[in-house]
Length: 377
Length: 212
Image (cartoon, rainbow over all chains, first blue to last red; front, side):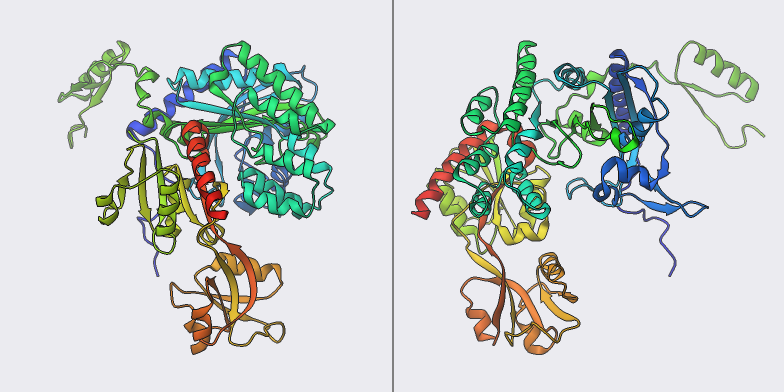
């Protein structure tokens, strides 16, 4: 049976016309802002050792990579994320550079399986940044402000929300239960889906009344500053309290900058415990059902490449961002340069035709060469 | 302009879900209840209801086309959709079971043929028990499969067990208990937090009444 020439694999697509233009403009807008915050652009290899991604993303996530073998039999992968490559470079190639390191990137990534049913794509473009070698509130604030500036510059003010959480709040409560790995994963899933009913039943066999109350607090509706007060009433273990202190300090800075309207605290966001180590955040934009971006602190990551140091960063999904722009009718904000009318040039003599074309191009005009059949022999 | 769009699973759950929503203050106009329209607004005009097949509720909610929905846990387990499930409802109670003509499935099956509408739930369950299975996906009348010899057992929903008994099947194992869930899109939960929280609160009260 011959394969159809028209079919393309699921999860990939073409981009052209206005959509391609919008994507290019969005990428440019974001990269300009990264540059203005002194983030250096970096592009890791598209093809790399599979082991890089196992170390960088964890073995479960790495399994979603397209894999193939090199001529020497080593397992290669089409990069499923950009951060792994940057973390390795930071720990090795740039080990001696002065800290902090600030990197930005815009690059396609590939996954065998889409991340969820709603995100059917297997090729997507990640736009993001990493701040490596600094811990604490100032570094966290810096990357959050960059995210805010990008969203605001795209005219999305009032249409987006960034949720913040510190995973150590959850870890602090779980640590006291002494659960095995599958039970801990089950618990993580219940909290992450804010599944209060099943959570209560699940905890009944493991936890004290106090711990149950702590968990119940995590899955309550997210909110603003009042979340801290409510949480402190029931969450008293040291590890969680330290995390709450840290998160509240960050909230204080955000609030004092007059930006708290863009933010929510969501103590139940525990989506990637194996990767992020403290701050975790998600970016949502009205009109887009899936999240547009996510980020957080991953202080263990570079240790996998031989140099432990703190790091924080985030990534925006270019397709989701483009959808957000369309949903919010915000596309005009990108300031499309009004091009001068296309000049249509026709002449029997090709030299005359192209001389005229070059002259118009020097003036900045857009040209379209009318290539009549057999015009140029 | 409606505040929230709510996807409701048609069929088994629909009447109970609408009754629950009515107790929570979301009433449908009488003429709308009788009509065959698949998208209608409640009396206040603040909520839009869409009626879709149960398996499609997670699809609409995950894509954010509906902000929230009411659907059985069985459907959620099968769909593996990434949704928030903030409220367990006291409606649509049933069990997901393994049923067979003979209650003893514990040995003698190097390969078990399983007929089901729930291939993922079945594969996961037997996988966890180390039982090799051939999953035969059917779209209805699953009880027939063992009777006619298409399968050794079935994985299906059971409410009263009457259909099973009438077809000579017994429950071998209960995989999970199911009831309806209130599910919410992750983005809507943050971006429409006020609307979601007031609906959630109203539903919680209506649900508590039912429990009591």
